[in-house]
Image 1 (cartoon, rainbow, N blue to C red):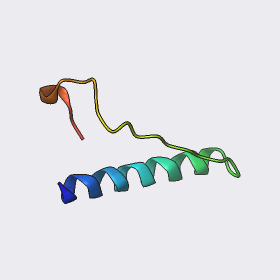
Image 2 (cartoon, rainbow, N blue to C red):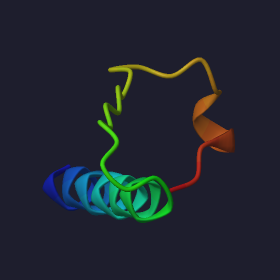
Image 3 (cartoon, rainbow, N blue to C red):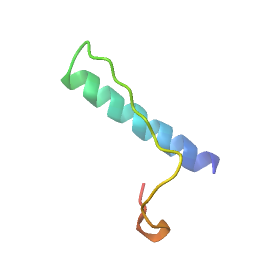
Image 4 (cartoon, one colour):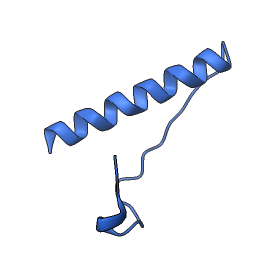
Length: 45
């Protein structure tokens, strides 16, 4: 669980940095839903 959590945080951080690079000075808020509507077998991170 910890490894998956770390991968998500790393991915979100990289995504946030990419947005900030493209739109300098912007405020970035990324909301990650606590659950998914995607079936378990179709999820991929």
